[in-house]
Image (cartoon, rainbow, N blue to C red; front, side, top):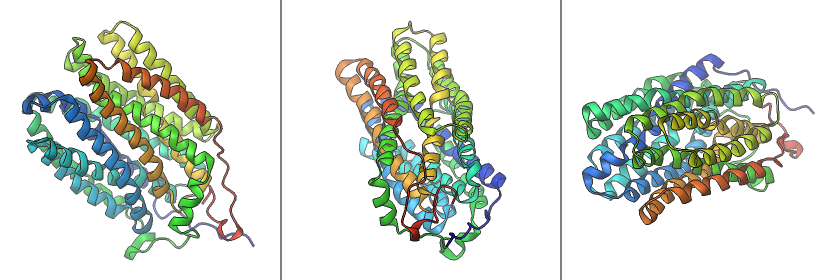
Length: 414
């Protein structure tokens, strides 16, 4: 007996992408500028870079852990409630970070509160809405558009954050961003899905949460995607947080770092978009393998070449194309393999792996710098991990997973 056809999308593709992109633009835009606060905040409080790096590491691991539960709640009750809660916590965390006078306060505000906030206002939750409302044949492209929005947020917000710090001071700049984070709330109204009215999830959930988790974690390709995403987190967060200080250590002005981070965001708009487009045409494992191999080459050339503003901008542009290009390819592969009924939750688990890599990358950067006075060892680790991630993505199987008859109605096209 054929499985029932999925219900028509409740929200238009345009509405989902416009609202989802605006939310990700704000949330990721603020997040990508945190490296600009490392030196002013640590110097004002007499802290080491390791203190700031550890708070950012807590933020990333909290984001990953909270993302699982944010995904579960969004899959069950809809994304709107999760996004609103995340926006409120974002504002509270930024304002708390501005007033942090002890390492513990910094870890609770910049680490825990903002980490939970990012879990509720970024990719896993927004991709769940995309998966439920955008047809399968356009899903990879739509995820690429949402990821490109996050990159546009970096391009837009990082120079603004740098200007706010220089004109208002680092504390006042964080307070302004706290109020800006509240703008996410009215936009989230556009992602209220009628299928979740009254707190009820859509009916098509043939698998329980535990069945979906057991299936995914026993599937080799899911494990490989998680391992690759770990490397992604290590590389991008280490670079995003520590590169401003790395450049200043080598005599370059803070403006070079701001422009470099903005260039990463600008070029990743194109990288993530085309990653989504290509994901509709060629196997996503090839896209992912190429990205990771290319990152290893680009990082190696960057640290071996003479360091000048020009070399920094070239590195930023090329790395920008590769920056978050893994996001649409990885999440579209998960949707293609497992369907969309538990997409936010499964994306949350994969993202937890990403954030474990982020934790290690940002924390290890601070530790090894304080121990050795250099970032060289971490750069070489990032190169080796890039090669490793490229190799392990090649055997990923993207075909919809075979299920018993009673669970066959949630394949990739669901």
